Length: 313
Image (cartoon, rainbow, N blue to C red; front, side):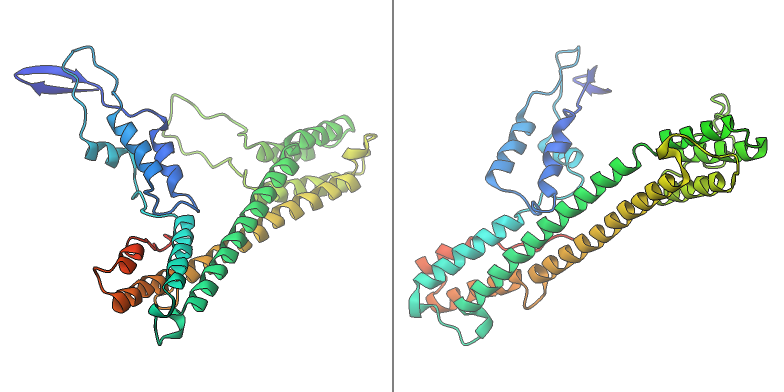
């Protein structure tokens, strides 16, 4: 809340956007909505800008300018076209050029209708490949989370089993240390009255560290001659099987992420290449229509408004 001097009087002014404003706008800049400024999105933005802001206790509430709202709500540009829009415009251009018959004439092979169709079809395949790779990656991430979900509880059971079986105090202390690592806990809690104290980091909760600490726990259990649990899932062989499953799930995410990155790179290259990319080719193909029919012709007006935008990496 700020105080603004208006006509000699200080008034309180609240100018805070609704919490979901950023979410609504930034959702448009995801993988398949780069450069998105379609009519539906613009309508949503305009409605947010024109919405009544919360009123201050004083009747002289002052609304920020549209420019200020946009700067607060969108830390990045609202992109002008999406991948799907670019592909749709490519199809519309191909249909128009085909309808022109011999009038659409070029001696550069890459701008011929057959080449344009091939470029567009390839783009569709690459976009589909990204969708598939992203689905695989999301599934791998979800499966890994599920595999690691019970790790803290399982390590606690192993610790309890070793404690009951008469394991040495030194070993128990080391096992409890590993269990705290798996939980991301400290042996001694931070002092809230001393926020500047120098603490060693207790957070080893990334998946590589958690798997490594669980492996150390298994090694200690296997080395303890007193460790002989009745419960099958606590036996060393079962713990090793669990560790293998954790490593496999973690590796599947790494591989899926690499494949997703490669798919995105191939798609972006196909769209963005300076001379042979879809965007550059179709922009130049519009110039072919301009040359064939003239700037004021209906044929050129039909395609001049079609937008072809690069993918923002």
